[in-house]
Length: 231
Length: 251
Ligand code: HEM
Ligand code: SF4
Ligand code: FES
Image (tube, rainbow over all chains, first blue to last red; front, side):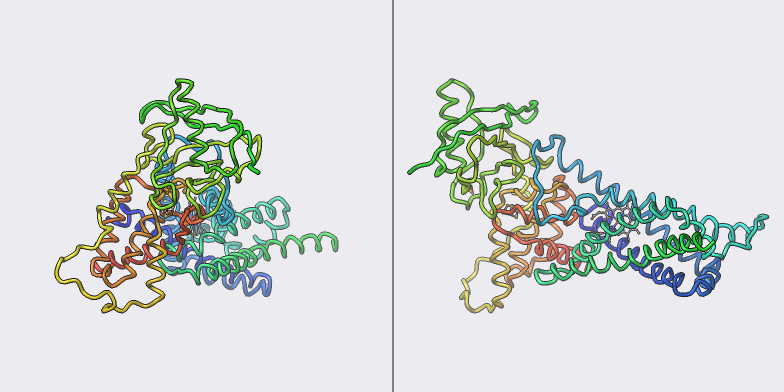
């Protein structure tokens, strides 16, 4: 199968799964902004995207994408390590035109992955998972399963969690500044003129996505401080 | 007046493909800054021969930047610290008095070391043999001007055709990928009507050969284009991806 056996095929898988994940992040980020504008509205979204069939299909689709992206990431990195050969250079110098993130995509990806793990435990495990178990007949308390705002304000009142989430978002930012243009380049959508434009667009897109998420963390950490002073 | 410098050169020595290599350091005095980098190695080799020691093996041929044979990884850069020139066009004025210059061979699994600084780059020839040509039907020769080619495409094809097959792109790439070389060879033909007839077959065959020979997967870091002595651009890789994916989707 050429999607597995050819280098460009493997890259195509990386690129398509990456772009799909970026689209998901845009969708997720837009919902998060609602948590700042209207907490009630946010909880309505939480109810709407609970454990219904469409939310579940979405979750499973997303899980497949993430797993494919990660498996290919490790596979590609291993093949590339081998292609480099056993002897390494004694002296290496950085070229000015080469982005730092482009050479560290796996490390950045692993930080993103750890963040996803923590995030699933902090939210998904307490929300959709609880609803699912309830649906399967387990005796669990679902009264808080759609109270997204409750969990958000609880978690980000903790400065350690807020900091961990911000570090996670930083790694994501670096991953996307290279990832987005690289993905389009892989599909073949690039030329001398668009190269510069795509790089700028990558920075804008990565910043937009990361700001949408970071805003929620900072807003709720800030308001926890304000409430602390008030109380 | 001629200026001279005293330098130390730290060179990779390896007796053969299977032997274990190591660095050896030599001191060289009174090297003219007007001499070329390869002349400096010639001087060093003369000295080694006069001392009845084994001279350093390195590749070179035209010494004017067109054959692509010279292949030294100097102080962390393929073809040395200067931009858009080959090792043979590098001058000693780029180095400082007292400097230690580290010289290594290209390091990539697909380019095994033959001896010292010489590597086996036949993998590139095999990729070209797989499809980097136009099958010529030797009939009457048509007038070159009878085939109109847009100026833009002619220029892009010409730029891609400036690739001399030196392998610096592979040497610079952290993934040991040959995509810049292959994309230049595919582009120079895919952009012209004469090459378009076989474009799909060519892209598939050359990429398949490149993968088979153990080159890595390109992750678009751009180190190749930054180090290419002929300024071959990264956009060629996007064109190769396009050619290859379209060819595969048509199957
Ligand atoms: C929200 C999560 C993620 C998004 C949106 C994302 C997005 C992307 C995009 C768009 C690319 C560029 C693809 C290309 O160059 O064709 C990419 C590359 C890469 N990603 Fe991710 N990624 C995510 C998570 C991860 C994770 C969890 C890992 C690893 C554990 C990872 C590892 C990599 C690696 C190694 C590459 C470079 C591979 C290459 O360019 O061929 N990513 N990612
Ligand atoms: S693309 Fe540039 S670096 Fe690569 S082989 Fe051709 S001339 Fe050398
Ligand atoms: S010796 Fe021919 S290009 Fe350097």
